[in-house]
Amino acid sequence: MGVSHISNRSEKSSERWSRRGVLTVLGVVPAAVLTGCSGSAGAAESASSGGASATASVKAAKTPTVTISPADGTKKADFSAPVTVTVADGTFATVKVTGNDGSTLAGTFNTAKTKWTSTKNPYSGTKYTVAAQAQGTAAKTASFTTKSPGETFVGYFTPEANSTSGVGMPVSINFTHAVKDRAAVQKAITVTAEPAVEVVGHWFSDTRLDFRPETYWAAGTKITLSLRLKDVEGQAGIYGIQSKDVTFHIGRAQISTVDLSSKEMVVKRDGKTLATYPVSGGNAQHTTWSGIMVISERFKQTRMESSTVGLGDEYDISDVPHAQRLTTSGTFVHGNYWASTSVFGHENTSHGCVGLHDAKGANNSSVAGYKFYDSSMLGDVVIVKNSGDKTVAADNGLNGWNLSWADWKAGSAV
Image 1 (tube, helix red, strand yellow):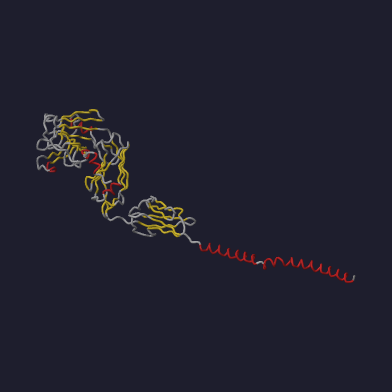
Image 2: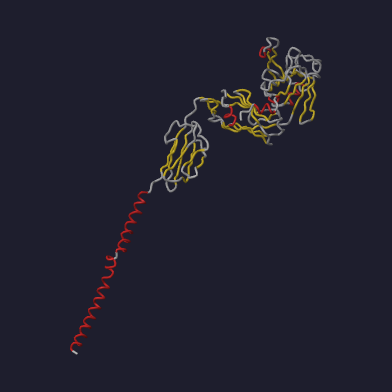
């Protein structure tokens, strides 16, 4: 029994100890868990290591680097190559290139948006500012100035800007320097018409390029000449300088036919006969060119000297009335006051021109010379037939209509 009693006390004592032990153990468990579990320790170490790695990655991220060509500050940049902008370690958000004249230079990105290239070359003698912004960064800016060309050329055009001409008027361009790269120059020039019609260029020489449709322009046509010659290399080291649009208009359709067999000129306007005049053409020794000719100059009065057309001193008339040029070589349709009125309609007595009866002083409105001049304009067509001479050369004046459409198109460089 005593043993049993002792045993009970021991149990109670053991029980009390056990509870404290349990509490003690429970109190220690968190520490044991934190310090005794290798898995937990590894996770903690990994978390600490991961935080350091993320910080290192942020620190290691590269800033996009933008490169602009031509480089910032270039004073004599090449204008025969496009502007390029590239970015390393990034992609582009925007690129803008602006000239000091307010113009912008358009361009395109590659698929990856890491390179931008201007679609056209920069103009010569121009300062450009480039603003290139990569994604997530501030824009980088740079400026450069293109060099000026050494030698230049321009094209002088006919007819005059905003003028109204007859249906036979071609667009004729004469260049101040010979053009060797005809294709490059012709591609930089366009002639369009409203109403629309095919217009083709034809080179008569290295300095002359004319444009015309297959048949005469329609009455009322609006014609636009677009010159984009600036920095186009016509020949080695010689560049165009023009970039402009010019508008012309076509008036009514007046076509006059001179028959030197009957010695008569019939004037038709918009298809209807306006007038019929007796004329006198070139004599047997000085026949008049035949073919289609276009009035290229008009003078109420002008001086005519035979020496200027290779005929010595046969004539020198200071006040020829109502003279209208048909060829560069000197053929005119003009008034004549010095010949008898009986000549007109009956004899061909001139040195190659077409004459109509007129009065000295060019102010008599009742005579044929005055009337025809008054009804005419630059670009009107005058057709001469039965003259006894060959067809006028297509480049002798504005007379390209004497070429067939196939021959005209064969003279195009594009």
